[in-house]
Image 1 (cartoon, rainbow, N blue to C red):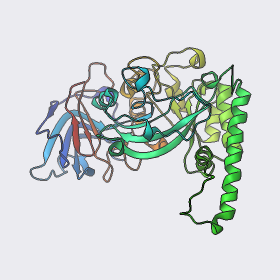
Image 2: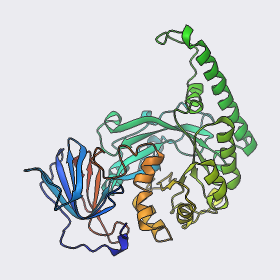
Image 3: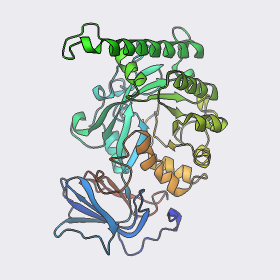
Image 4: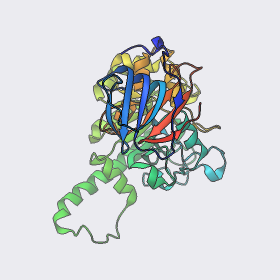
Length: 412
């Protein structure tokens, strides 16, 4: 791929033409179109979107734009950005008790708490990250409990959570280490954390085996008064229906998560991974993906070994990873993945790998790569437009399209 640092604006200007807020059939022209797919970077390229999906991608000289179609133009065009792990929509921008729904502290294990029941599509931070190019969020409950809930995938549009929803119950969120310890109650130690997780998985596996043996004798539509929502959530992990997302930053906690994955044969995604540079062989052998801590996260406590260069180290080691906004305890309650990727690119990560970490690689890790993350025919018409190199501080996002709808024309 062409290095982003060699970008020259050329003849295109950052202009948005005929920007109807409800447009569904549009074309986006770019001095450079970074497809993040097989076509790589297309100089003087075009993306055609009809009925919310991409129907053509290619050079402007050979890609027909249907007559009368709305046309947007920008110097650089990329896929809409994908935030691999966020709490946006649950952590409100006001940072007041009434808009903070990312964590319930009444019990240490609550996998049945669903992000869909807490997400606020009208929170200002949803609009804020959208204006900065983020079109897809993998969002949900944050750290602070051993098992804090479930995540979901949404687009950063929609008047209701149902309108924004792409997938409910994407992953079950677990947290290891000091952030999820309760020295006065339970779990009070790391050993107790793993023991509690192991017991929950054992119970779920036992119940799953029993259900499979009794399946022929049961009426699927019958009311079952013995349903256990906690057990059902863990059972979905044991059955391989969704991953267990484990926030683990210290090497010892990462290794505990990998042992659980091996013991139960479950899919685990490692989140945070500040000590990942110490476990490259182990992570690669386990075949896990990593949602790396934000580069801007404060390097203290569990994150004392976090580094600006870890993304480059993981890329060199061939370990699948994505960048994220993560959980931010202070206002404004979220980070911006475009900034995170730009800072990683300034610290050893190749620009194309940095962009992949917030587009196609992020989409792949959250299981959404068939819909988002690259500009390819058949995928959602999600596009971000820039007036220069996306990773330069002076560059602005000049327009955002989600499924063919122009959702922002602000210069951010």
